Image (cartoon, rainbow, N blue to C red; front, side, top):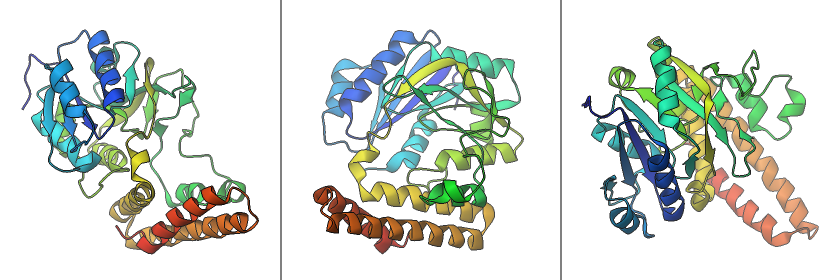
Length: 310
């Protein structure tokens, strides 16, 4: 349910990164001029996240969960509680450098056919982080999923749009990264929340795909910037992060391109992990950084044992 008094609802799903979340919240309140609400869905963090929010940010709507609900379900919990006209999904390891919410809503107000937008994103060292994408195809995934593929497939990477506009220019894209994604409430009410079959990864691709099927466009907005430190929650998951990433990708293909295409991709990705396992084994046998090689072999072996079947 929307509330006309709230322009933007920030929705943050957090897990065990209290210090980065604190910096993120500080940047939101320092730069936002619109009427906002901030919702934090905490996935049963074992650090001091909950205490930090209650003590230092009492204005935050804290939805503390009793279990790790994952990125997708966590966002749906936040979306269901949000009252804003615009819904801004934001990772806890991001920092707003200016009034990002105002810039994004201004773009949406000026472009009524655009339903989803994302800002220009920088890495920790202020280098450009690509967050604008084309919808994945089997050819693109074959190119990007195998370590030798860039030498075998003469296709541009998915993060380079077909007309390759500069990241300094706002332009239409197929989808934007979920680390910072704003959606109109009317789009959310039309297509529903994220598909919780994706525990984490690929959920924003699917969301943008569903919006596009209803006639909504997505856009990259270059007039505002954020920093995204990247992967600070998923780093804690180890091999599980690889499994979540790959099974979500396969699930997307099964949903939008059929079971046969998804099975081809699954076997292809497993082949890549098998090749990497052999490479790490050979390097370990030669005594090159043996401890690191052993950890990688164990991680790849866990992925292989999963079969990437979800």
